[in-house]
Image 1 (cartoon, rainbow over the protein chains, first blue to last red):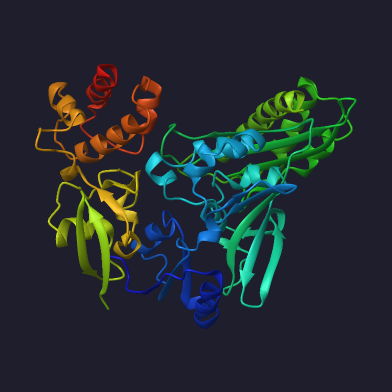
Image 2 (cartoon, rainbow over the protein chains, first blue to last red):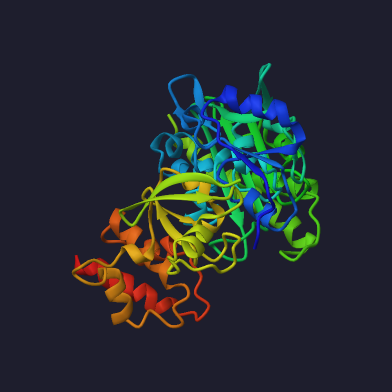
Length: 292
Length: 154
């Protein structure tokens, strides 16, 4: 299976990478792990004339937990997320998504930046990142800007990244004490499948055990990961419990907007969005009860 | 236009000229004659093109030859030594874990890499480590047994 012809650039600094993108604009495409882009190029869905690899830019591979949040470089791989103690301790739901992404071979190549930037509605990492309130940093020659993931996804394969910009970093606020998150994905098999539905939930309790903050994000049930705003409203100000979580699940289910496809019927996905909301809230509550 | 790259494959240094749109698996098979690495789906699904790059198993169909510049690659040809087959290869033969053989290169490399990092994996860990390698003869059971037999030998 032949790849289309292209020129290959391998800048060693961000400045150099931004210069190349500024020069070629929409003719260029950024490649990191390549697990998504290479397949699309082989299928001739994408044929960029210029390919810009950012894999040899050292600053894009770092993990920084020294500040008041967690900063993950765009080229940090999915396998590196799984093996990071700091991430598994602080961002367990992100780690769970990483463990369920692709195969060991894919996880060694695929990057967190790529899993976000490719904007697949079934992607494993965006729901938990959005649940944690993550932002992405976009760089270009004239500077950088920060965009909340809530506003980043525009549709399948479409994002807020402009042609001259590169997604360089993911910033996640450190979860507060008494907060927790859960992530569950369901597919046909355990390994190398595409999700049928995936949901991430985050809750934060006050010192009286009342939910003061909640975020629920559902994947595969819309053109982008969807926030279940009405379910979040049901939770905030209430004491957590089975009955409350069931009501939140029902609200999330009715907010989901899945389509029938080869992976499952819309009706099944709608039901599962509710079930996974309830179950991920249970996981989140359990973690919140134990996080000091 | 072709570009020169340097890489180490099975402890041997290579300097080769490659096209930008050439994948690592094509470099190995068609330019260097290392046909032990197989080409199956070419989409990163089947794992028959598995190689170990800088200590990590990867799909060589998803990597450009240019991206392998400066890397250290091990293919199935690099497992056998003067002392004979690698213990994982021996185990695959011994336990009948090879049927048509098309997935074997990838399976063996994934298993070897697992055992290098975790000399005594349990069955779940073995199945997880091999989950990126598909066998269409569905000889999975024998393959798992072969990897287990190496793990318990130690």
